Image 1: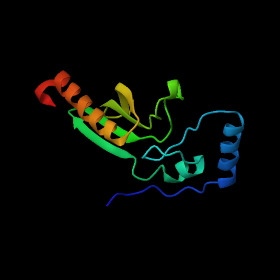
Image 2: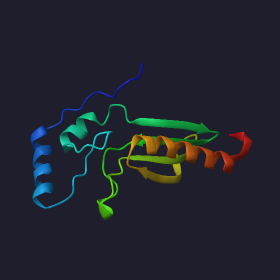
Image 3: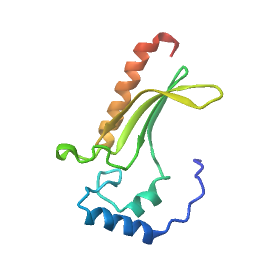
Length: 132
């Protein structure tokens, strides 16, 4: 069974005020559910701890991780779909966390994220050779 972090108390009024301020200033919508549907900042914050992982693969000392971020990372460039998933490759160190080796590579849909993860795993398997 997956362990969950304890739920944080979140002030909905504060999040609603921030959403209104963003809209009043003409800024694009930034928060989306896994299907790409716009949601409030409050809904994003309360769902964020739930089911973020799309895929993960360990290749020797490298770890390829693809996750749902839920925040549009395109910053509304050229009217593209919101990019709410990302893949990164990390080198695991024994004592001090990890170092980013590749990425982030961002995607608009869950299907694109799953395909992108497989493509990056294949790329890094080629770089690392048979050890991975």
